[in-house]
Length: 256
Image 1 (tube, rainbow, N blue to C red):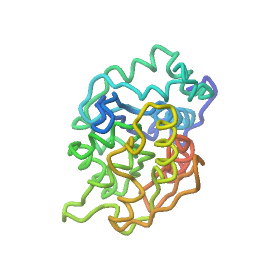
Image 2: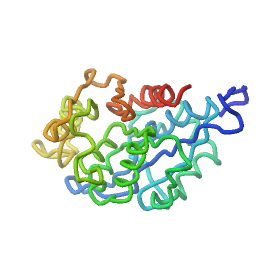
Image 3: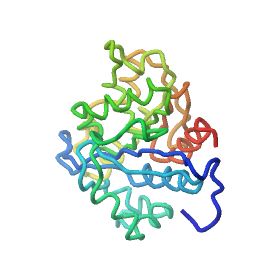
Image 4: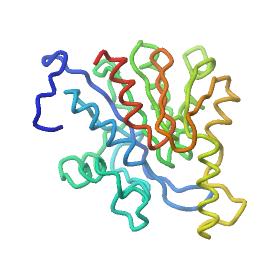
């Protein structure tokens, strides 16, 4: 948060947002280490703190989290080198330390927060089937009328999130998430680089296909375009360029 006056709506009772990032994992399709995506943490963080919101970072298991390499602006690939917001976050020792010792979702008190935002990265695709506490907590936010948001591959959570009666939270909802066209682009890029054998895919399943199969109204804005959509108190963002758009809808839902 900068030194300017954020002028929160209620300085004595600021809005509180819990951002959830994925724990480190290993891809079952490539054998590569996978984690969360920097911009999906840092861009919402920046948007929220500039409005005077209080933000805390959680992960399904707690502890140290690691980002996907390509999301780091310092990575030799240069893929994210223009992401100055993430670079600033990483360069600040107090902020970067927040991902070194995240609190487990089991300790997330829904009553203390106004919204939950589940960031993506590659790890959710391989781990959120087992993240039962996160599944329950996300649904609890939604059922309490609070804002429940997810973006990019963080929307993998919607494949498993069920209400108390067993019904899928996403059924009948208008949502977005990582698009098939973007999965195709990523697969082709790794094939052309020789990093992955042609025909092998980065992801074990696809967000767009699965959400449609579960009865959701899946929409998207096109290849690598920042996009987010709100259906009641459920908010979803398309991919890693959609952090700001997702945060804007969360802020609108919270009243500013």
